[in-house]
Image (cartoon, rainbow over all chains, first blue to last red; front, side):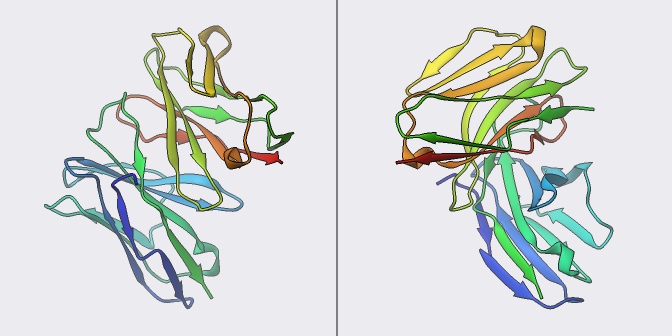
Amino acid sequence: DSGVTQTPKHLITATGQRVTLRCSPRSGDLSVYWYQQSLDQGLQFLIQYYNGEERAKGNILERFSAQQFPDLHSELNLSSLELGDSALYFCASRGWEGPGTEAFFGQGTRLTVV
Amino acid sequence: AQKVTQAQTEISVVEKEDVTLDCVYETRDTTYYLFWYKQPPSGELVFLIRRNSFDEQNEISGRYSWNFQKSTSSFNFTITASQVVDSAVYFCVHHTGRRALTFGSGTRLQVQP
């Protein structure tokens, strides 16, 4: 158990809909990362937060947004969903934002858009 | 920008064979960290090992060992006496500064009984 909790584990929704994925980092970890894993794109970095502030953006679509709350949990919002958004979405946490420590990943949320 | 290349897409071995997973990275940074993660069929990403750029000493941990060669920008990972439970996708990962982790495309390892 990595200590990172993601909910829900599975999500099936229709095109055009909006969903929210939730992540609770390990206790005390301030840095949260979101990654998307699809069959043809591998693991793609979406966005990073540190102590409530956005720190870095990767290949995140404008239809997607995220935030980190004061209690450090994070949510990834996906809207106007398309079939191509079907993927495994991972959240990871680290103790701080600098280098040197590994990231611990949640079990992922498998999103299926039909 | 950082780039991690895992040229081996899939490897199949028979149980008890040793297997080495290759990783080559590109970076302009002088200080960086390298990791290996494992993704078993159940889907979670599991941290295995970490190496920093200023320590080229290679290590062994149980059945895992790694060979870090800064001169060739390689960070290879070896599993000794492979087991069926080692079947998974293995990712080589680069991290530097305050940026996100950069993943390679992964190598799928199948260990046959």
